[in-house]
Length: 206
Image 1 (spheres, rainbow, N blue to C red):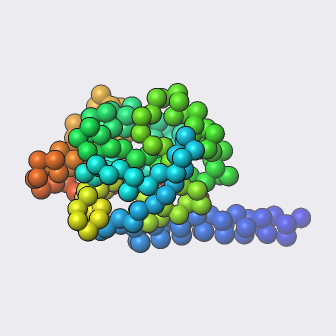
Image 2: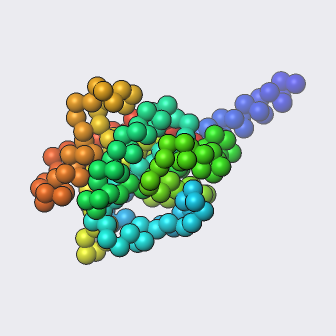
Image 3: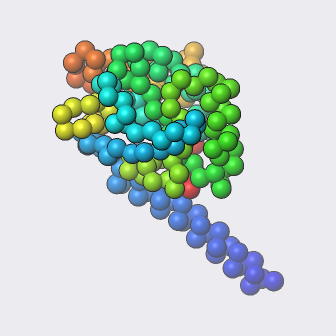
């Protein structure tokens, strides 16, 4: 009996180490400020495949890695909707991506994503990172984890990485809107003062 318990403990520890290693690798190997982003093709909640290259008129993007189940992600949903309503007409639409493994978090499966998108009235793509191939390229480690990309001649450049603002739970307590400040600076042709902040949220489930 003790041998079985020890074996189970070893297996659990190996799985935890593997998950931690995946997150650590995404931090080390993910995009940095100034990097060119590789395009992707992911399934939207409407069943259609979406790529960044589909948005011919976009000046850039607000890419947010989010999900259905994380309390931090839920707290930011209305703010993400507001970001898209404000900046999509100016050329910076929101692209939301769910990076979680649904086998680990069933509440983040595709059907649950569809239901959440309908419930909240998402007007932006809500994509599933099937196989979890995209989030490591970005270096995302949390939900939510946000990236502002600017379209230039050589491709899409990372201009901001981190949180949306300085209040992870209470929208009424926001004092600093880091992501909005970044997009506003890009629209005005100004230098972004704060280009990177530490993402706060739930760890991505692998």
